[in-house]
Length: 362
Ligand SMILES: *Cc1c(COP(=O)(O)O)cnc(C)c1O
Image (tube, rainbow, N blue to C red; front, side, top):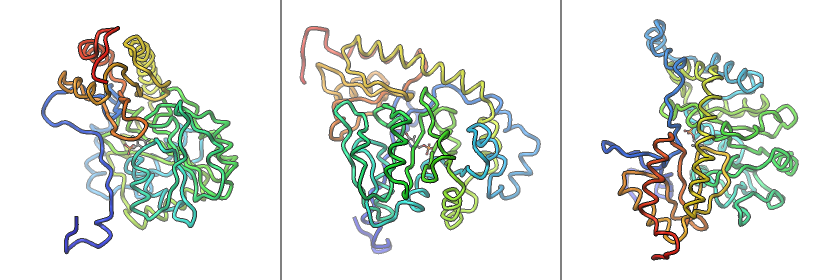
């Protein structure tokens, strides 16, 4: 695909394709790991703030000082150890540009967030993708050797598997002169955060988002935590691109959301309880269920292809994620919705799947 008006390099870009956002038709949406619960009321109240019109008339604070302070306090780090961006996707993009454009290849797992190779392609970063083990766990020994750095989600997406913190430390020790970025988009659903290691490791960058655990995917807020020299690097890139990525609404609403610890605990507990119940029910429906510490499960139906189950669920008005990719093409990634939504999913599966004992078009 070329066009005479395009910069020549544009033809070589391979843009990311996000999960479908259906318009109009009312579907049960279990395909992009959004939180099924409404955001904190304390956060929503900022929309009625009498100071908002004046804040909107002016440019927003380019440094998002109050938001960074709220994040620092929530995460137990110093304000100068926080960087905010327009969704963690933007934070990731700046991290790739700031730290990974080097001679050696960047390392990330073969099955992981599919935006990573897109950023590599955009910024001309070479990369290597060590294979996850058969059970989808990371073998840290595969990450030795010269590298521009390492990036991985923890828990990983779309597998949901978590790497224990002592293994993250081994990664950090393998590459003391390179950034190891831990993408913690799903850390609030039961995992231990690497944020506690920041003061000990100058090469650690932790990246998080308010899109999943804070039910604010539409607000576009993500952040990075790391020692101040890494944060300064991200700021150099950000200030060479967009001075005002976080609008005034997002700064106020985001700070209030981060501060509402009780909301986070209550909502994450509900998601985790539903996750256990659904994993058990899928297992009873003869699915192979990958152990998950995220707000989704990766599961493989038996007796029917994953693609056929995906299609069947769609006909029942239920959207899940199917990846036509090596190693996971027989799995479905199912976001954890409300209990009612998950009951509808399980009912639909009981209709779609062949009765136990029979075998069908594998
Ligand atoms: C959802 C997700 C993101 C992106 O989150 P935004 O903050 O909405 O841009 C980043 N990394 C992983 C692994 C994700 O699953």
